[in-house]
Image 1 (tube, one colour):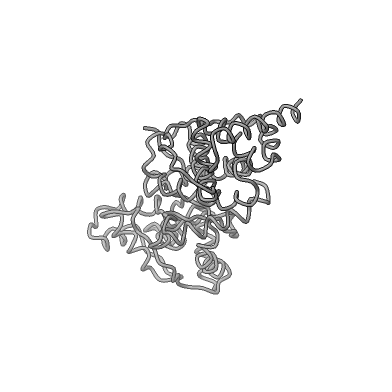
Image 2 (cartoon, chains in turn red, orange):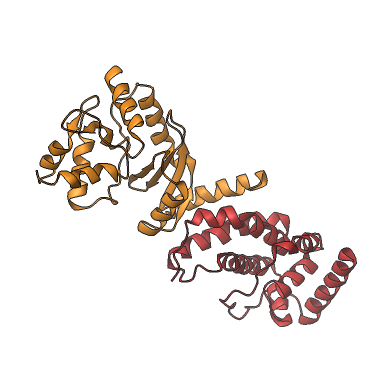
Length: 154
Length: 187
């Protein structure tokens, strides 16, 4: 077991990035609340954490769970999503900052679909459930979002 | 950290404190000797780092020995900072902030509580200290009660001197010890 560094280290090193990821996932308005929820959840769980090797991935994974909670709470007909996997599924490269800035600029549905797909690695059905829309609509949002991103980044 | 993060982080500190998640709150404080590190638990001041001590190493040690929930939260240490300011300016002779003794055990705890009782402007020898802590022959241990005192200044180990009247060693340097004794003589 690796020793856990003081929690402040996680804030100093990753808070700004977590905030950027959340802006991408839930938009500027919801990001601040999701940020609080993310770091409070992390702080609660921190002393019991067994592996200190990928603290950044751990934080970003919690952030994505909070982003999904946010979408579910706002979804029109939320359907329970199967339990979100615990392992780190998203570990963005800091050099990807530009992409996430472009993602943040997408319309809300597209933005959420893109983030849930690529950051949280959710299948279409679960994205649909999280967004409270049909799988076909989720697929469409994702497709439109990606098309727009390709144009932006080209 | 950019300025746009200031407000969210301030709110996070407030909520963490309200939820009882601030196991160790720390802040820095200016002093005539350089920057001090102050750390407290909900029970009281648990550690004071002198300018000679490495901040990162001190915080890592607190994370290991007390809890990894170590957060920078200057507002939690306002009273400690105020009392120290007053002390350095000669306006305060006793400290009132609560102390958390959890980093001291057994003989070292008794010796340090003995140090805390030495009145302002007075001194004791290492032998006095050992005797008062219940073991007259433990002079060397009394020395390490001072040299490894987790809360110097507030637990005034600078008031413990050698039997021949010379100041003896100090974690913050002999010069600092001399100046502290001088400050207390002249205030």
